[in-house]
Image (cartoon, rainbow, N blue to C red; front, top):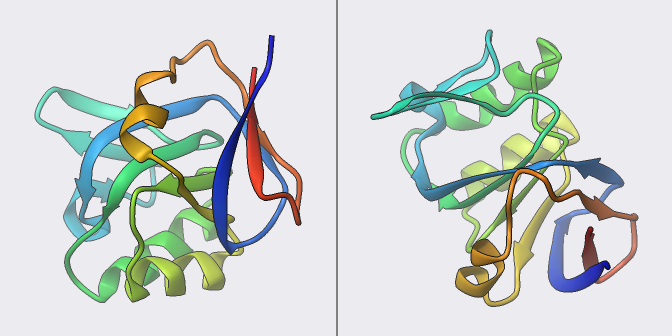
Length: 132
């Protein structure tokens, strides 16, 4: 059974992948390794390459845009990002890297229904993602 979840398109594009939920704000400069395609957390490294990266939003340095671009250049980028809120550094990085970026409606509820076994898909132009 699939479910459609409303999103706001910030950087539009097609994507499909398994979700990785990091239920916090990320600093791309320092917490994300653009060579390995992982997020460093207190509990270890979480692979984001080829995944749908779901997180609250970004924080920190303007270098974050270049880290997002480096993820793409190194072919270890997430296929798209879904967040609670955006800020200019995150938007600029996704535009530079060509990584779709969306804001999830009711992020808290959205984040509770995700699991690694699910598949999230978005078709350019749609106002929703499909969760299967």
